[in-house]
Image (cartoon, rainbow, N blue to C red; front, side):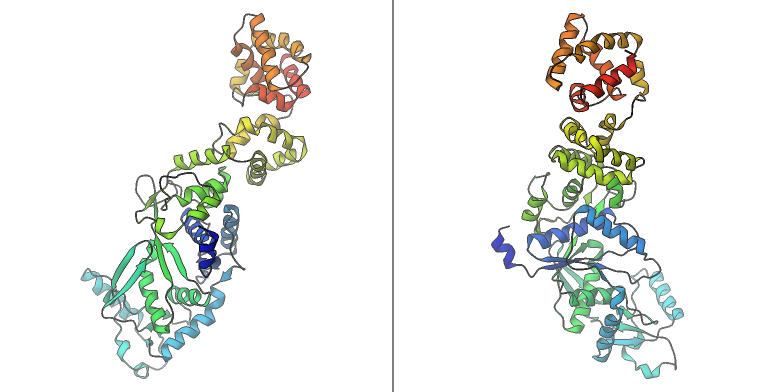
Length: 481
């Protein structure tokens, strides 16, 4: 997208409007990403609205978790978050305006009457819709002091057409939409009313959300019509399913974004993976954030449900790790450590010399790691205190025979002039040749003694990062020389 075309559409204004009933789950994160990308691509803005009208289910902790999740993903918004609950007076004002203009009416149906209507619909195996007799009756006919709700006087003939950027043109028979409640009997606004009023007042031009809200678009369109307001453009994106095609559940990956953070995924990789769940740009799989912004548009979103696949996410994360700057990866590790068990201690070590060593070791570490957790595990030798606590396989490698080999090798390493990976490898290979050994007979015991493990990045790279004194000291700890 060129700067010229972006500026031409700078009136675009979208919103992400989560309900604070829990964490920012992966489907909500993708919705936020689509809105964010569209705003960035069109030179517009994205606002954040917390739909907290359900006071029983909402919590400040959930709001904090959603904000933290968005910030970790790198999705910013314009202005301060807006509380939908705090706009309740405005919602009631619009409902009363609709009532005054004859676009809404007071409905005095009792709970028992509604129950009977529902039972009849179930018996006739048809959708539950309320055709209230109070639509054409005067409120003065109701018993004095009777409770009432305010219902929209919706059109009950013809159809409501939704022109959707993703789903195409969708027709809804008005007879199936019924007169939805705008204000409950306690005076509180309903979801559909609050959403319409907020979107109008906030100047939202495009509503990008899950396809499960498509029928709400038809209902909300009738509220817009009742107020004589412009209807925003719709884009209802497909849902996310598991690899087996079933509805996404926790076993598939329906977790909060903080869980993906704690599993060691990079924000850039998760953004990349999420954008491909429903949107495509040719056959491309790997995107930088800038490329996503340049290429994203609503016409690239498909209708079919996307399938979440951990294996693909992990492979993509590994690719982002390999393409990341070494210092940036260390920064990401520093951001992750406070959430991991024992992480605070490692974080303290990083503020010392270990931080520089980790940067230096990153080229070797990131070639085989798929997550930040694997990077941390691969660099565990940097955080260990002497004498190292060897794992079971390392102890087996360091047999008496292996220790004797290292005792003979140590003096040659001690006198080595240049302590770097290449001369270290040359010295060990020369030692192997002169003692009629195989490289594995020396390299594996070296790895066990220096890292405490049977697996590590290339051992000569490890020795260069640790330095001469630390490497030789670790060998001496295990051999007793």
